[in-house]
Length: 109
Image (cartoon, rainbow, N blue to C red; front, side, top):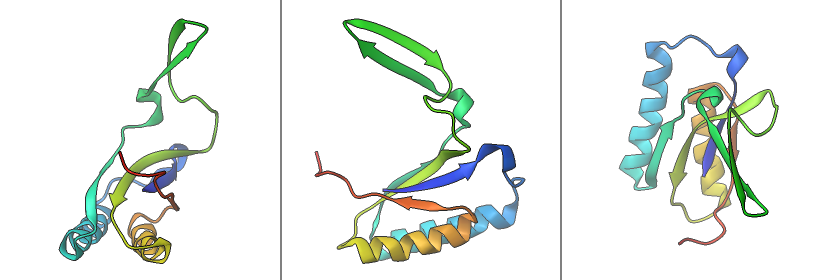
């Protein structure tokens, strides 16, 4: 999975050039057959955190942890190895102009 790491307090304005760059990377992933799915996320203040402890469930608004970087979107890709994933992450980081975190899945369900 490639996670888009961004600072919600310093988001660039939505512009056609940014959407076009990301769209081009998406199209290239699909053409190369590595695309599984992906998407952008609403801001972290739209999140609800669900916790279960000692048989009791609580639900709170907003992110679980205070941090400057939030998960702003993601791609799930199917590639042969970490080097291939990092090559795609480099393209994604250039297109998004923000850091991309790459994490392998712990098996597939």
